[in-house]
Image 1 (cartoon, rainbow, N blue to C red):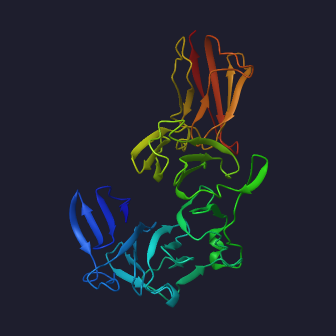
Image 2 (image 1 turned 180 degrees about the vertical axis):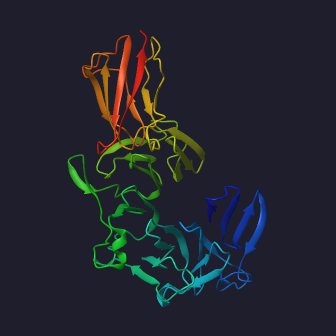
Image 3 (image 1 turned 90 degrees about the vertical axis):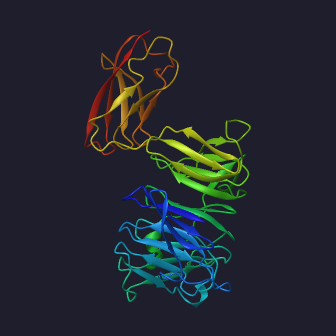
Length: 375
């Protein structure tokens, strides 16, 4: 049902099983099978021989959290000291079928039930062994208590601004301040309005969203049940790409999973297999000391893009000729800027050396590298 890799040991992997609880692999071999006999996980009703685990995630303290379906205490944790605890999240949240689990940057656990029209949020306040300070909230369709507009939540991710993006059976929703869920601030899911063919409508409201991934430029990659893959701008208001089997090497329009590497490569799981796309947004450099351009030198006849890599996050980039005349400027996507080798007038750069000046978004740091053109 779910899988997570130990962030401190890539050979240590945990699988959530709908039959056998939590299965731990070490170096490709089964290390432990955790179920109702040897952990806080409970046997699932009505089949007392099954331990139904639907989701597994690791928090920032390396505690392993597990969703346990059809039991009284639907959430369990295996701490980094190998102690087990389980949690009762209220009568209305007991003995339900659990679905996905997500842990945000505030250490809040977001639990998506498989069938009920709700969303459960749990906060152990970083004391999994103490229940007195635990907080639980069940979001609903009510305005002021979640505003869950869709009957099914399919997936959730947190973007680089800390916002939670939800994929549903009726498009996209966003909680802009998830930390407010246990305070007096607004934590309702908001729908993004966009203009399409002259009409204002909710973002992708006719699509079933199956997967969301955030790239290093904070753009949103959106997988759908039947319409392929979308790339949206940071705030979701602009469609940058829409890939389908008709206009790309995508092998199916039914997307099942998305993942993005630091180098920008987007892996796209579909019902017919996996493909990847070399995206433009890459992980930024912390100090800019290893920045470079590729290809460099740019050979005669080359018509592709030139990548300036390992920049500061979202750096402001200006390219000048050797006399200091600006021929191009842009903003990096994460840690990479792309130049088509042409000036503002669309003319290809002539033979010579060009200087790349890049500064951090707040202007506190800068760097320079060179590109040689040979025509």
